[in-house]
Amino acid sequence: MGLITAVTWLFTALVGIYLLYLWLSGGGLRQQAAKVTRFPVTLIFSHPVLALSALTCWMAFLITGSRLLAWTAFGVLAVAALLGFTMFTRWLGTGRHARGAERRFPLLAVLLHGLAGVATFVLVLLTASLAGHL
Image (cartoon, rainbow, N blue to C red; front, side, top):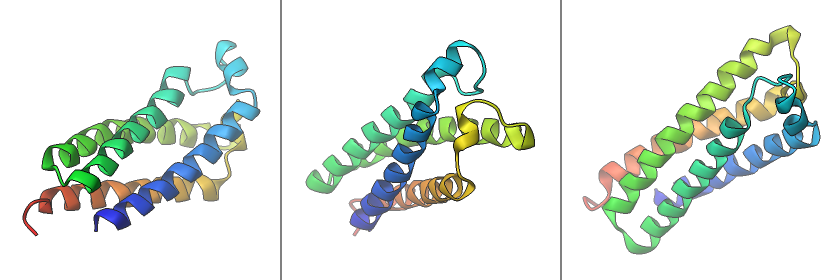
């Protein structure tokens, strides 16, 4: 189950990288300085940095089998997920009046990233809970 979790996590990360690319290429950094976008730079970059840090802990867990690493990955992922949920609600708030670089986000990509993220979160929780008991 740990490997399936890693694959799901990597898929989530790839879609997230695509969304980050769209935001950056749409002028998100410039628009943030002008307060056009609803996504602060700290939010935009903290979410993937934390998620990738958690993924690193998860990979280390898969190699070592350390329950501490599995739960560390879960804790860091929980914070990343909260930041992701914050971005999602801000993105939803744009509605038909979308502004800034986030208006370039395709609905399908946002839904895929969110659903894969939730699946990853649940798989990490389940796998960490079962670690050492199998």
